[in-house]
Image (cartoon, rainbow, N blue to C red; front, side):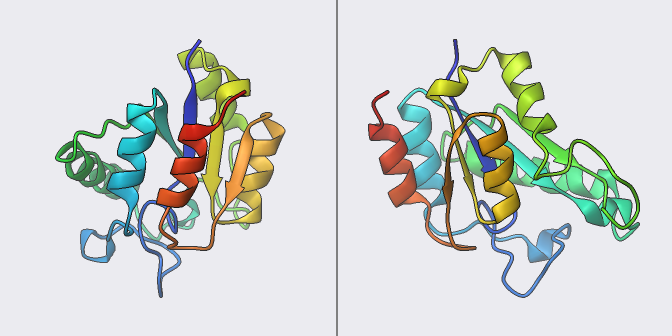
Length: 165
């Protein structure tokens, strides 16, 4: 079985300072410590999977294509540091527009990845910056770490890499 770290995007991977929705390349800045933290996780044998609510799509503020373009930029940027993102799951729904089972704090995106990649949830973790991130991780039986938005993730990644189950 595979071990993985599920990571929220906005506020954890990239800065969300002053913005609620990030879809433009000009607004996209990777937070300090992300390449180092992800490299540490990857070198410790973890798959890296991003899990993100992108309700602005459901509101019509931006499109799937814009989101996919931003994800391509993220993947290319991290690839320069030798980091591979296994998959990016995102929910396009907004609670004002529709109810869904995939939007965090629900855990459907996590459960899909667990089934698809044969992930051992007892060896896996979640890093997020909101209560809904942590709730989704807990629903899936993951050990979950909540950070402050835009906090350097290296200390948490060191804890995860050193974790013994």
